Image (cartoon, rainbow over all chains, first blue to last red):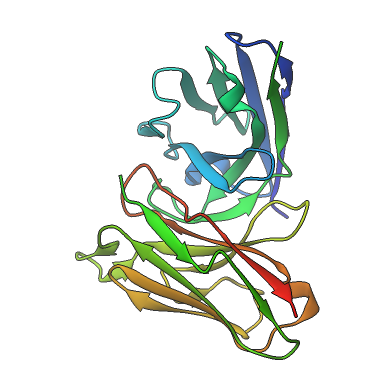
Length: 121
Length: 113
């Protein structure tokens, strides 16, 4: 059974940094691209970032480019999202999602339960 | 960036009736090399993460009831629920994965009339 467990969320001050983690199980982690999708309170889904199976290729939304870094450790079956210069607009539930292929150009077939990040003073 | 536009924003459908959701992309998401549309549909029930329903515009994900179907190609797509059930009350999103950033539509809320 595929499981994705996010951690690292919480309350952070504007301008602060935070790192999200997502531990995956139930599949061969290195064979699949992974992504982060967020959802602000009461709003729709916003794609944030994706990374290919070996981490060779990364992609970012314009809204986070230069501030967020996606990475993965295939030896630990773990996906990361390092976030800097956080603003109130980054307040959201952040979902870790497995993609259906090795390439990032694939759909998201499994999702974690999400981790809430609140940016506030 | 490819802009995904869904319509309507919301709709109310009676039990057992058909629900139709539209999604339009600002440019084609048909990948010419393999003739596949890089378009997915997701269902998000209240308080839950999204769930993949359809990929490749028309291929149902394993375990998804056959009352859900996807159609369309290029820039215009449709998700149809042929006979609405109580558990189908949710918000539905389309997403293109043809070109980064892999953008979502704004969502369509489906309610029971």
